[in-house]
Image (tube, rainbow, N blue to C red):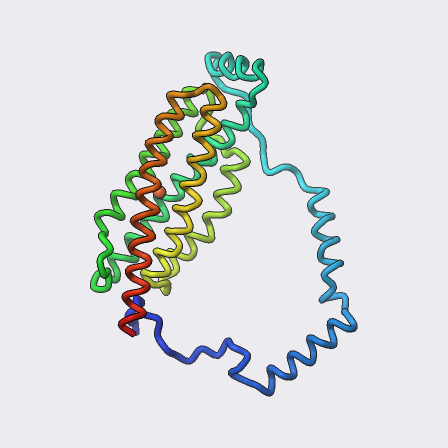
Length: 248
Ligand SMILES: [Fe+2]
């Protein structure tokens, strides 16, 4: 039967070793034997060597294609001439685009979670969650426009876009899991927003470095919104967690 997810409840959790002192003792004895006589399956060195071999043989995560329009190519060429690396900037723009799009999906899942527990919100404003979600979409569109301005293709999955796609899978799994509470969901949103804010800071610095001061100004506005997201989500998370724990 579904129950309240807002509070941390007592239950039959048997994952701790102290659930079974006798078996815990036997397990520790076994672990001690493994330390003195390491077997192949517990040999950390073998694992490190295997990882090193995969790393040596791996292809890069991806690449950045050349700009697709003549105007963009000319611009990129000019930047190349000054020793700056437009491909690194395009990679980070691709990253921000992927992250903002992922952020909108994360908030879609969070809004569904909050609506399902509407009686437990304790000060969290779902309308404000929707507003944050819409701002993530607006940020994705802003970055898309900037990529196009540089003559590049915004549909390209750049290496860093690939990276953040993998990273955000864990965040999405945490929020879409029907068992996670509102506090768990806000904890996850806070993690996402902190990364987001840092990502914009780096993008602003890169835009300035590339001589794209107009873009940098627009990115600064986006970063201000992201700071508000961090502030709001952190506030809701703290209020929900601290208030709930006081009530238990
Ligand atoms: Fe955000």
